Length: 270
Image (tube, rainbow, N blue to C red; front, top):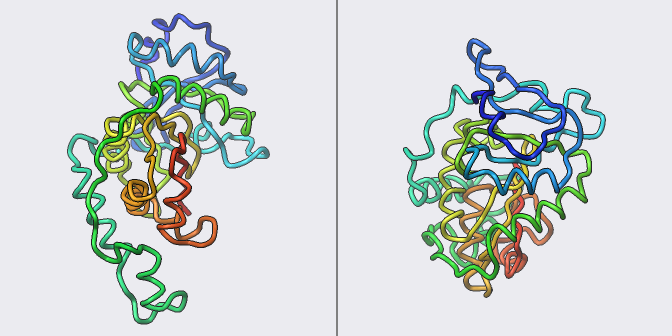
């Protein structure tokens, strides 16, 4: 990110610093981060300016209240140099391949029997059902993003503000070099490609991101259980830990019920 972009910002910025990535020659400045907690008013002002400035505002979460470096952001554990381009990946292909990988039946699995493993992704089993169709927005995507930013910051009052040179939240994840899903794939551009598709089909917006978490507002959530099942299948392929390690029962059907008319999607990778 070019620090000169900060001069185009009209909203007064608090004290902060450019963050240099910990990869390569150490000369890539991945983002700007505030020194202290961010207010939702600050986030909202920068969000309103994003199309003019080319800077996407993110609420940045850390590993915990006792993380003095505010990792991974403050410690520079960011790897933009090793990411590909989101435009080089096909959403349907990615999700279909990941679904196939995560629904493999292992006869030696000591956690679930083959029958129980298939039950996790019922009614689809091992068959990838394909992408969900686009949904009609229930509210304006920018309104949904603002509402969720207030909700998230209230729950996580120590979040800081990040600014990334990107035209969208999906692109910002790759541009910043975030590697939250690294235990599944170390190329964030693949996940950005899927989030970009959700931006188009569901009015999703990237509001906040943590070391291994991602938080989206959603203007067009599914409004029926059947529609939610298809969205849940995409979520499982994108982040299987949401189902495997989520609230009981750990099934796609139970997870889908929680997506109906829900205007925020949260993801966590173990």
